[in-house]
Amino acid sequence: MERRVRVRFAPSPTGPLHIGGVRTALFNYLFARQHGGDFLLRIEDTDSTRYVPGAEGYIFESLRWCGLRADEGVEEGGPHGPYRQSERKAIYLKYAEELVAKGWAYYAFDSAEELTRLRTEHEAEGKAFAYGPNTRQGLRNSLTLPPDEVARRLEEDPNWVVRFQIPANRTVVMDDLIRGRVEVHTDTLDDKVLYKHADGLPTYHLANIVDDHLMEISHVIRGEEWLPSLPLHYLLYEAFGWTDTMPQFAHLPLILKPTGNGKLSKRDGDKMGFPVFPLEWETATGEVYRGYREDGYLPSAFLNMLALLGWNPGNDQEVFSLGQLVELFSLERVSKSGARFDPERAKWFNHAHLMLAPEEVLTHWLGQCLKGKGIVATPEHLERAVGLVRERVNLLPDLWAETDYLWQAPTAYDEKAVKKHTTPESSAWLALLASTLEQHPNSSAEGIANELNSTIEVHSWPKGKVMNTLRLALVGESRGVDVASIIAFLGAGETVKRVKALQQYLGGGC
Image 1 (cartoon, rainbow, N blue to C red):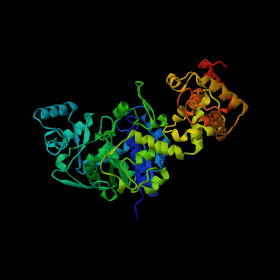
Image 2: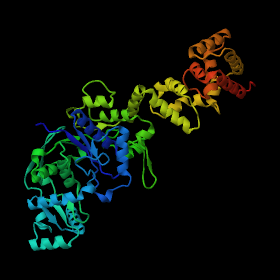
Image 3: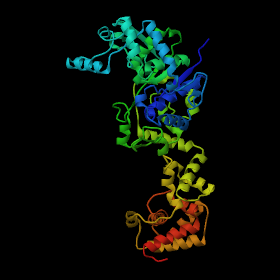
Image 4: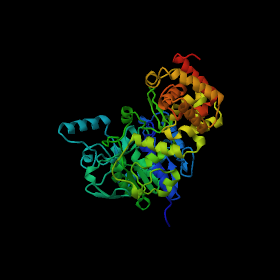
C-alpha cells in the first residue's frame, strides 16, 4: 500500500519568518496539495533561550496572508497534536532513555565551564574540540563512570544531559531527493545533546525525529542549512528501529543575496532597500523591518516570485497562480545550487499579478487609501481611476501615487515644468481653453481630445506647449495619464477651476 504524503513546516518562534522560511512552507504546501496529502504546521519552540514574544503569531499571520492553509497545526488542531513542541515535553524523555537503554545514547555530566576549558585548550594547540568518539572516553559520562556514581549524579546533578553515541568508523549513506546520494564518515560527527534535564526539554534533533515519526511524516522538505544534520537524523532513525518508516529528505537551495554571493539576510534588505520578511516586523526595541504586504505586494505575486527561486517549471512560463504551481511543482525540478534574489524582479512579478488581479482587489485598496486621507470616492470613480493607471502600477501604493491628482487639485506647481512649458501666451491659451470647456462640456476622453485638437489647430498654437501647460494646470507637474482622460475624469467644472488657478498663478487674472 502506497504511503500517504504528509509533510510539515516546522519553524521556530525565534524572530520574524524570513522569506526563505516562507519558500520552504510553500514547497511543502505545493508538494502536499499535488499528491493529495496533508500539510502540517508544527511550532518547534524547545529552545526557550531564543524564544521571541510575538514571533509565533507572526508565523501564523504570514501564512494566512500567503494563503498557505495547514491541514493540521496549532490553530487547526488534528489527530497528532499537540503541534507545539513545548506542549509535548512529557513525550521526549522516554525516547531519550530508550536510546540510552539500547546503547545508542549516554548520560553526560560535564559542566559548561569544563567544556569551555577543553575547547580553549584545543584551540591553543590549533585543534577543534568535539565531544565524540575520540574524546568521550576521557570525559565524565555514563560510559566512563561506575553505575552507582551515574545513579547518584542523575539524582543530584540538575544539569545532566543525554548525548547521542555516534558509532565510530562508519560511513553513513543517505539519499536526498534533490542532491542524490550523500555519504558522510562518522569521524566527522560529534555526540549531539538530545535532552537537557535542566529545563526538561529535548534539543531540535531528538524532538524533530520523534515528532516526525509520531506525526507520520512521509517527506521532510527543508532548507539546505539542515543538510549537515542529516547523518545524525539517519542514525537516530536506525537507533529507534524506525528505518522502514523514515521519511524521504529533500534539502532546498539557499536564497542568495542580489549579488549572488552568500545567503540573503535582513541586513541585505536594509542596505539595498527591499523587504526580506513577508509582513512588517517591529522588534522589542522599536526597530521596524519592512514587509512585502505593507510594501504593496499581492500574496499571489509574492508566492510566484518565491516559487521560481530554486525551482523551474520546465517551460518558458513565468507567471503562475497558486493553483498552477500546485499542478506543475516537482522536487525533481528544484535546483541544487543557490538562487539569486532580485528585488526588481519581485516588482515585475507584482506588476504582472496586478494586471491579472480582479478589479475589486485594486479598487478596494485604493478606496481604503482614500478613506484614510478623508477623500470620498464613488465605486464608479474608483473603477475609472484604476482603469486609467493599472498598467503603470508595480506596487499597490502606486495606485495613490499615480492617481493623487485625480482626487485633489494642485496646491503648488513644479517650477522646472513652469519654466520649461509656459510662455507669455500661456495665460491666453488657458483662458480660451477654459471658455471652450465651459461651452462644450464633453464626458468622453475621445470627444475632449477632438475638441482640444480642433481649438489648437484653429488658433495655430504649438500643440506640445499648450498640452503641457494644460497638464501642469491639472496635475501641477509633468506627469500623469493623457490630458483628455484626466479632463474626462475630473469633469468640466473641476477642470475649469484648475485651469483658472494656473492662469491666475501665471499672472493672467481670472
